[in-house]
Amino acid sequence: MNDLAALLPLVAILALFWFMVVRPQQRRQKEVVSLQNSIQVGQRVMMSSGVFGTVVSLTEDRAHLEIAPGTQIEIARAAIAKVDEPLGQTGVDRHDDERGDA
Image 1 (tube, helix red, strand yellow):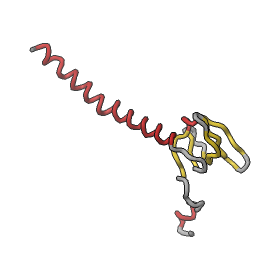
Image 2 (cartoon, one colour):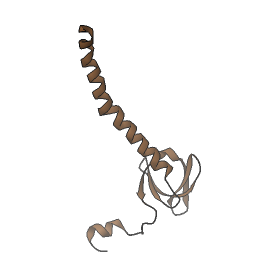
Image 3 (tube, helix red, strand yellow):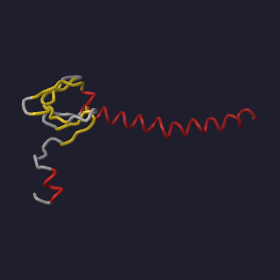
Image 4 (tube, helix red, strand yellow):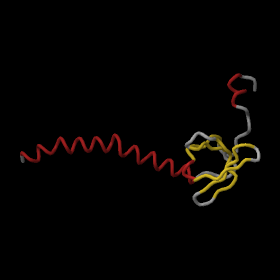
């Protein structure tokens, strides 16, 4: 019984570590995988390196991005960090919206 009581704080620390670190990391990883699987041609995305581009074509594990007019690069699909502009958004200049000129 005494040995079990000595183990209780260790179990509590491990449970706290699980709920504070491991579980949120697993959830973030699932969200990233879901985002990368939902990418569609025509979306504007940001890579993990900070480069923005528009998706031109997709394969199982790669994507072609147009980063400037007439300039395309091939990247690993896993390098896409976020969708900058969802499909169907208009090409409204975000800087005009911030100044109130639109």
